[in-house]
Amino acid sequence: MVHSIKKVVILGSTGSIGRQTLEVVRSLPDHFKVLGLAGGANVNLLKEQAGEFRPEYIYCRDCHKESACNSRFIPMEEMAALPEADVIVVATPGGAGLQPVLAAAKAGKVVALANKESLVSAGEIVTGIVRENKAKLLPVDSEHSAIWQCLSGEVTPPSRIILTASGGPFRSLTKNEIDKVTPEQALKHPSWKMGLKVTIDSASLMNKGLEIIEARWLFDMHIQNIQVVIHPQSIIHSMVEFADGSLKAQLSRPDMRFPIQYALTYPERVVNHTLPRLNWAEVGKLDFEIPDMTRFPCLGLAISAGEEGKTFPAALCAADEVAVDLFLKGKISFGQIPELIAKVLDAHQPVSKPDIDDILAADAWARQKVTELAGNF
Ligand SMILES: NC(=O)C1=CN([C@@H]2O[C@H](COP(=O)(O)OP(=O)(O)OC[C@H]3O[C@@H](n4cnc5c(N)ncnc54)[C@H](OP(=O)(O)O)[C@@H]3O)[C@@H](O)[C@H]2O)C=CC1
Ligand SMILES: CC(=O)[C@@H](O)[C@H](O)COP(=O)(O)O
Ligand SMILES: [Mn+2]
Image (cartoon, rainbow, N blue to C red; front, side):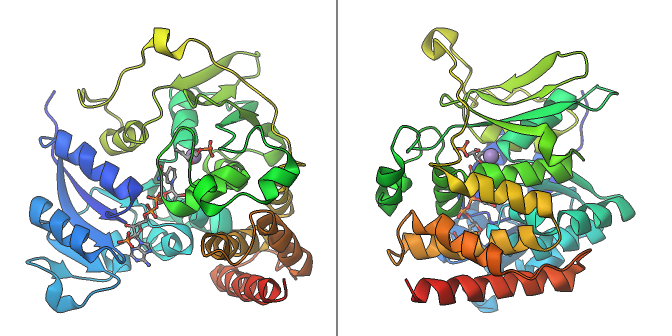
């Protein structure tokens, strides 16, 4: 098949998703050219990537324009809207994803979206701008990519979405044990190797809560019709159920290069021999459990915030980002993450039908509130 080479911008290229995106690009040189790279603190890796992929544009949060190699140094929002870009991969975490997503959506770009927090905080605004500007949001998050793939070719919306969750490293611990785990223990994810923030969110099941809200916006589903099931092997990446009771699931080895590649080559599928195949004899069996919201209160907090809507999801997201950071710095315990978030949500004065300024204000307020509350622990 004849195909043109897609020009790819990668925001967050030095992170877990960014590096895996570059692995996909490296393994399919006839399909992709890197147009722009953006990173934060890891200046050496960014330089190394620039040396290998020769992007026309570069952005680095923690370095000066002069050190921008041979590439043109431009802000991330400008890079997200480059007219010549075919696809923008947004793989900056947390609040660092929102402005680039908005910029790309306003410019009508195809966005391969890894950053889930932008949809959680501002889902209605982001999806509205996407529609108005005929932009496209292609999910990279493994569960949402699975759902997207399951829905491909269907003309009837699903009656239910079933998000799978690994259950994280503390799936079998008691509440008392979970509350006291260390950052080192929480960073040992049983099936995925990811950045710090999403790994801690996986351990608390906040990640699954955020993914419910993400799915709500990506697939226009009511939160009540999105269910979570614990599936420790992380082989089934999610499922959809239809009106007739039939289910479709998408499976692969737990490797983010699958959903990244699908978003990049969409609507085509392309042979890539570097991606691992499933060996059924090794898999053996697939297990499922119902999540326990008493031991993992973050899941319930996210569902409530998602159901309430308004500025609650933005406050939830921002409070979680700060609480995770405090936990990683040893300033609060793992059990204090949901405690703090619950207090922030209790104190939040929500804004109905928020515009982007209301979302940003709720975000800033929640960050400040969680810091203040943590100081009193
Ligand atoms: N990792 C995974 O497997 C998955 C991740 N996701 C989502 O994808 C997103 C990225 O996750 P992940 O790759 O794990 O995160 P990482 O922490 O590994 O990487 C984050 C990247 O963003 C860069 N970055 C951070 N802040 C800024 C900023 N202000 N300006 C420019 N660059 C910045 C970092 O730069 P530097 O390192 O140089 O400081 C790094 O390149 C998250 O929203 C996460 O939830 C979703 C599903 C799976
Ligand atoms: C790989 C990916 O998509 C992560 O968001 C993943 O979902 C984390 O694993 P958990 O299922 O433990 O949250
Ligand atoms: Mn996920």
